[in-house]
Image 1 (cartoon, rainbow, N blue to C red):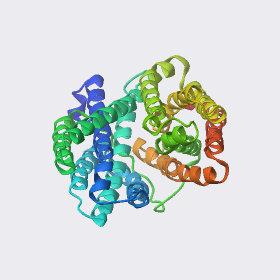
Image 2: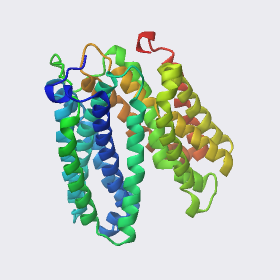
Image 3: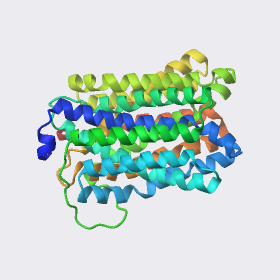
Image 4: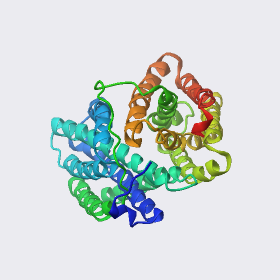
Length: 388
């Protein structure tokens, strides 16, 4: 049950919802701002692709190793407090990335960026679950739609900065200052969720039994999602054989479909229910990847990638919504628990695409990843109806 302080009690559900959307936007805009400057940073530090790949791995390491800590913090402090601290940390580290002058400085900054993203994202989603509890209809997918729109906005801003030769340091510093100012302005309009103390556990534990299914669904979906981030462009270039200049069209189609899916997802849930949406999401992922693998031509592959975008759009937000209803732990602790396994799929599965592709080809690797969509469908049938 969500508890409100005097400050948040004076806000309407709509005001609380808008404030939470602002923090989703800040998260997406800040992350896209950094991502838009990766090529500039690579050139500045004279990194080849292998070196850049190794350095970029510092961020998910920072994110993954602090997931258990985030769960513990959210059992002691309100998600609002963690979100504010995480957002400030996120913004400050973003500025430091731009001022990195050596490989070790960039590695350290990206590790801290991963830590801050973990604190910021989990607590922001916990806030969204708390706001969702104030509504009798689904609104969760819209929050993630705002994140996607912010990603487009951040990428466009980054393109503008690069086009006008604005340095990475100044660009990210300006973004950092803006994010901090907006965070300070809106934090009082967010919801207060009282922490639910948890019994002392080991540093890392598996999610409780009722959450295992949710964690596995997150694992499958996030593996497919990051596969598209990392390999969609390469697939279009080396399997569909489009010119290199047009290789990103598959990724763009996927991203647009995912964003649109997040804005229509709540309407689908409100009409047909969460389990129905998750089932069809799994079917779309399976059929989309299989279509691209079986028919590696521009139109079928683009159609397949659009289906995958629609499929992955709402899986994680809807699973978070269901997991946030846990009666034995706070929503933040529950989300951190299932995210621990979900992010393993995000981090570990995409590298295996390369190994499979080396042996059997990219089409086989995408075909095998399609099975994760089928796994989602199977897992959804095992969700108890009271989580509907």
